[in-house]
Length: 162
Image (cartoon, rainbow, N blue to C red; front, side, top):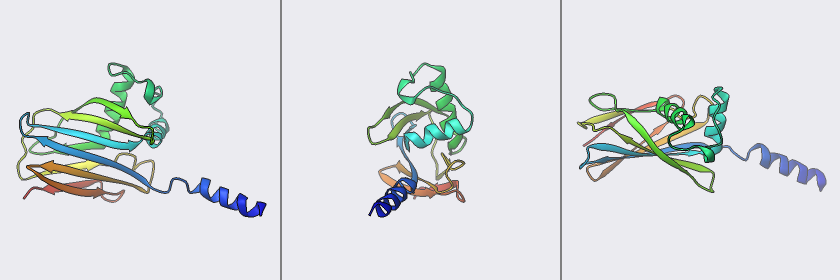
């Protein structure tokens, strides 16, 4: 019985985190002509990925909006999440919220942008650190939603608006 419990406990602790997901929700604000974005990612996975790259920042819960760590975090996220419409879209990290469920929501806003027939999205957040990482975007534009997946083999997607 002890051997069974040991094997069972070991298998749960070894496979406790088989799935790696990050989500992006992007909405085009017709009034401001800006993209309002939320990135939802595992706090632990993101902290680990940042540390693996040799970037030293304080615990996420201690980061203040006007701090150097906030700027480092913003730069990291924007290296791994990019949108191009008629030209590359510049985003700014407005803030973030850490939930008790172990995920962090990052709130981004773009500069004013022109949207035509499509956008190209690059979204490889955490893929350099977790080969099983899967990301997904849902883009809301003119009262329709468009969803695309991202994998280690597909880091860029084109969203065509119809």
